[in-house]
Amino acid sequence: MSDDPQLAHCTARIGTVLRGKWRIDSLIGVGGMAAVYEATHRIGRRCAIKILHPEIAVSKELRARFEQEALAVNQLGHPAAVNVIDIDTSEDGSPFLVMELLDGESLGKRAHGSGVVEERELLRIASTVLDVLDVAHGLGIVHRDIKPDNLFVTSSGGVKVLDFGIARMKQGGSNVRTRVGAMLGTLPYMSPEQIAGGQIDGRADIFAVGATMFRILTKRHVHEGSTESELLIKMATLPAPALRTVAPSVSPEVCAVVDRALAFDPSRRYPTARAMREDIERILGSSAAHHAPAPVSIRTDVSSLISVDGPTMAAPAPGQAMQAPMAVSAPPQSAATSPQAASSSPFLLIAVIASFAIAVCLVAAFFVVRSRGSAEDTRESADDATSQEDKASGSSPAAATSSSASTPPSTSAAGPSPTRRPATNGKYRLLIKDGKYPFCVTSKLKKAYPVRTNDDGAKVCSGTPEGPVPIDDLKAYHPSEFQWE
Image (cartoon, rainbow, N blue to C red):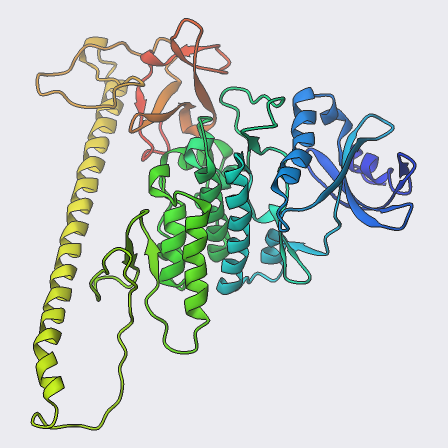
């Protein structure tokens, strides 16, 4: 007998019959919301049954989300979305879904088991997932929980997308209410805007696909944290590291796709799941060729393409296919017998000069961006140093410099402006990045509290033991500083 009461309760169902027709044969797994069983219908059909836990079933909102899974999958009608056959309620009042029984394992289990998922296989899985998401997004359905454990690889090599239970639906899901600021999903795979509890669209799923590929290719998450609060802050404020800096062995083409999917700003990601899938299919088609593949073009916006091979070739005009240079061995010829080679020499020289000029421009642009980043880091470090000096010296409010939710920390040429010190015990600070995604954090990141707007319009740090804390009285906290006293 297990020491876990919930597991013992789930195991006790084995051998029982639901609604006089579904016999529970074995327990497949237990999650936070439901247990999944292998079952047999009285006519002999085998299936999987997902039963909501009784303590979860008492919540109308969670019941509605559970039932929404059947509604979302039914609307999709995609062969790579797990098929829901029936929905009903057990004799003890727990809702259950009857689904097709899959033979295989999740992508997460495969990655943890064998430890190796080949790059080409991962691209094929991602392409299928994006095809499902393309259909879902067209129907106004955002999955919101794409991750390795929700992608199932069947024994025949197929792919199934699982768990549409927390999907946001534009139509047909009006009975499901999501609390303001509530985070639904799995933190390491959530987009910054999803963590902030704001409005999301299909680009949140695209971020999750990129985070899933990053996890499989690097054996680590996009961001790592010793606590959930630290991870939450990193995911909400820091851009993802370039894939090639973490996994140098991954091909440049795949790195370009993943990096774009993980762009911090949604407008810089792929605009649609279809656009990302087209780039993946282009890589798959190129790698399948028996001859030397042409450089694969990765889409950077709706109208133009660039080569991931860098500045060795001029970019083609929009709509023009990029051709790979071919080297063909030929017998040596003299200048007199090879007028074509003689006439092409000036063009070759021009191409070399143009390539060199492009390389110089790219290097210059890199150093400009790097210098700007260094200047901003220096400015933030100066602000942090000022903050620590104020704290150590106990200077008056008129001599301190502080930040509010609407004004990032800055230094005025006319001198410091008087601002208020923290109104409470000084244990909270306001985390703000470019004016977006504010959180209130405690010392050493032990806790992170969301910022809410009260009925009177005042913004406060909500959920703290002291009650609502006005954020206008909190000093700024920079994401680059992950510990403070």
